[in-house]
Image: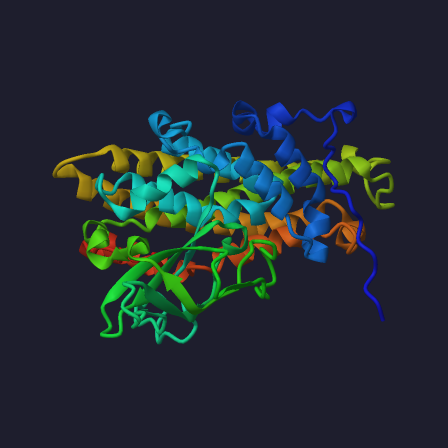
Length: 420
């Protein structure tokens, strides 16, 4: 039996002649001149999720509009926006399409780390490409490692052996979020003797295979899945030695990508709010035992929509507070910096736990506003819960709760690696 056809439009009114004000919905995107792109993403999000239609064309439009360089200083060809402003934009982008917002996470993280690296760092050389609109992706995790986050990689970078001074990269990576849309891939590997090393290779180089085989229940269009390297040539200037990252170890550099994921979840809550409003406004049948002819005038339904908006507002405030904490930490120098980075990490962990819980409850409440109408596959409203649940599963809340409690009770410091 074939699957029922899906609708090709979202619930939310997008066109201006229907009373939709994109500048009010996405003020930061309006400031950057990309509101029309977000509107197109939002219009197609439900259909694309249902049919796995790639948003690659719209991602390219974001590149051409200068989104990859939002954090670059103006003297390097970017907009030089504050860190908290970047998170505000990420929430708006996630409201339009959370898969696209998520797909850019590794890029923005790379830029953030490169900006804080030494002037002669190999990573800084790639900022010129970012200024031109290139996206930088990452290939880190491998399914075979005994523990998530371990660096016992099977991906190897070995001398070519022909005396050319080049190297050969071989290995398989998974969870390669956004790589399909990227121009350069940052690959974690090891030399034959086991010494960690990083390579930066063009995504189109011979031997690089990008496969969109992510089979998760949500975030289906992030361009994730497998990245395979088969005898990929790596030139000496594309090799980043492990000591380049020495100053970052123990400094909670993973707070940025952690908080970014939480910001995407907060963006999903915004979409749930908008969809709840349009779902109720579009309903004409109320239950016979209701107190009003139309659901929009039903006090019980009004209360649910009000609660949904409260949950979204709370998520926005929580994320904004954590982003400001991270920005303060990044701007702090000297002896106080370590304490500020620790505080930012704790704030991001608390934000994740709070926003995850809000998203879970709100994704459920959305269906309380529409009855059986809301569960029809054509609306694809279940994608909100699926996307939020998928994002939350990256780093389980239970592990974070344990460290938060241990810190308060015993002064223990949480891990500094990528999964906290």
